[in-house]
Image 1 (tube, rainbow, N blue to C red):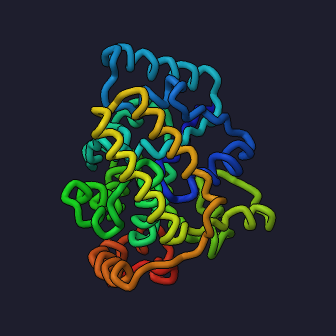
Image 2 (tube, rainbow, N blue to C red):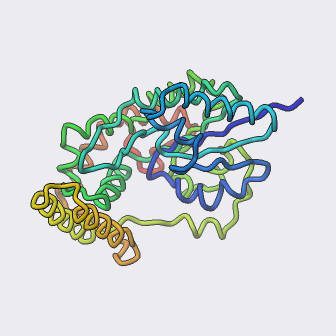
Image 3 (cartoon, rainbow, N blue to C red):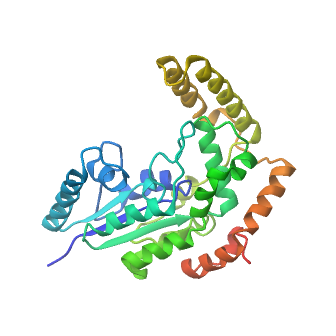
Length: 308
């Protein structure tokens, strides 16, 4: 008799999640895709750190999925970046730093489903990741420059997460090394055949798919414009007392407008100060990245990672 299987794509954010969720996962043969939205009970029961209706209600939802999985004997897949960066990790107005212990809480909850599980986790060169992450935060009202954001004390816990190795080791400990599939995000562009060969499922990759993977960063002028708009909104928030209907409407409007990336040139431009700062920042991950090469089976120095 066959047994069910759950494939869990846990992120990281800014590592081709949208590409996978839209163009890959729905087309994998023999897999039932679980919804990963705020309305999905399974997603919420796994990812939310605090359950308003009590832990017994959360457990009811998890038990119901396990019963369904063993009854139907299907392969399931659920994808959510919040599994490694739980909570509202992009919230900038009232931030709560995400920690490794938060991720471990969710990992333990996934393991407790007690069905055969495979974990897919994508990683990205740390300098490139933090630039992309900062740009995403700017869409959500971040006012600080990239250098200011990296240097902020509350950012340290987020930057600890992108060492990747402690989290991958935790996943291997809970699910077994053969059931954890860590893949460098950059191989999607530079070595797509290798990228898809490392997936925990079979997927026929085509040249048409290759054209859809290219996505470049916003230029520095676009990011500066967004940051200045955010500063104006912050001033408005102070004048209105914050969290008023006017305040919320203004924030939603600017977020929607600045989310249209097509309005801005997609060119990679950095100040010399930012380049120098990021170079020093990258060196701090050198020894860690040597371990990533060993874990993934790919020499990440060829992908631009700093390796000591």
